[in-house]
Image (cartoon, rainbow, N blue to C red; front, side, top):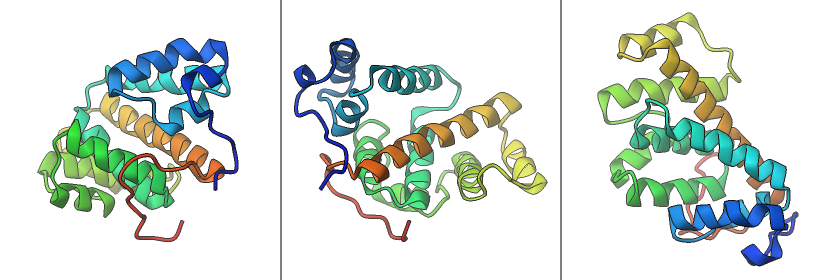
Length: 183
């Protein structure tokens, strides 16, 4: 049972959030519970959507962004985000079950993406205190400094949504995927 009430409809959210939620609906085809939950604070919704939109314009491909989201959600034990990103990984990023499982374990079956996912997992597990070897490995795979910053921001964005959902105990509105690890 949720600890923070999620508005049942877009119309039940503050007026300042509604146009942002309509944009989400156009992009995803629906307005997932996470967005309606965050919409109870128009400022929080604007901040979340702003960072997500900016990162969507970055140089990391969508499949790599989904891989990072899956790794971080597993590390944080966020069932809502595991469910949402497993669904999005299949439908939007066209990742298969083998890849999704690898991502949840903190790596990838794709050689280049593997370095990004491993680095993102290290950032999440070590709360940013990564080693020189972690930096060297991701750079050796062909990622530049700007992409390293983007990876860190993707970790932060996913930690943000993981924590919101963990605190709120958001009802999962995707096919349910449970964390393999205790949070």
